[in-house]
Length: 317
Ligand code: UDP
Ligand code: MG
Image 1: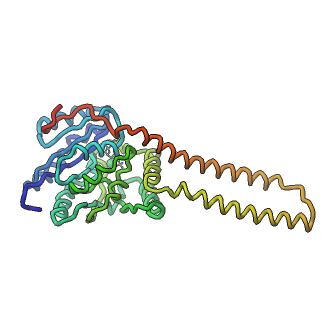
Image 2: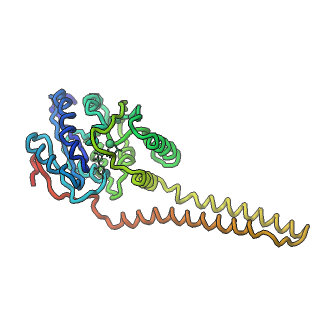
Image 3: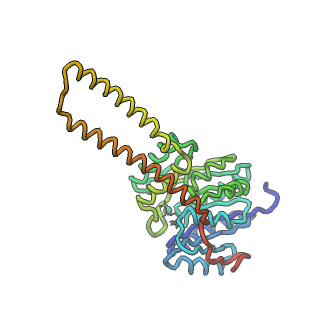
């Protein structure tokens, strides 16, 4: 596919990244210059930033026509911002990348080379996450371990949203219309011929991470419930096991009463049994709630994001 001039879209979500706008553009420029035979468009999504991110992005789009800006009407979260960017990208290949330069732009040249060799998806795997806090590294490792064991979908480990996708993959992705989007899962679900490259994760160029522990926990929940119904079904087996154990214990009590008579003490064991079963029931109702809540939200069919305005490129509005 090297004969005709290809367009590659780079999709970047920005949420309160004012100080990173110019840093990002500077970091990206050498790579774009190196790949002179490709036309680039950089789709910057402003995810309802409260600082000067939008103003800086608009200024950038004015001086460099390759940059386009999609302004969302409020903060919709990274998954929605990415979706917005991918929906607006026009390229033959699309590369989502973080605005904080934690994903090295140099890798884009290698991704494009792999794509030209026939790969439809090029994944970027972090071989070294030592810049992330230890707790995040550990929890991420556990997430992948549990996820890949329980969910039907296999998520490639240590692969983020940074990747290259051919137009065919992007079109497939667009047919997945769910409103609650776990992008990593959706990316993996569509499949296609995949090649993996390794890279070193860098420290943030400026500012702090937007993902607190609580946000990550909710992202993990979203990931599980989007691609597995196991948490719903497991209660049948827990219940069956409980019922079997109870039957065995009942049989034992009947025998013991017949042999050594009625034995009155038993307050502690009774209380423990009641509390244990009660808690188990609450947990199972909670799991039901997670799924029903998602069915409810999904049934409203609200859009994933709302665009306020677009700047730059041919779609100035
Ligand atoms: N981001 C976003 N909306 C949000 C949170 C984050 O668009 O609600 C963007 C953020 O600006 C950055 C990318 O998502 O470009 C990754 O965020 P961050 O660096 O905070 O995540 P981490 O690298 O710590 O996982
Ligand atoms: Mg980051």
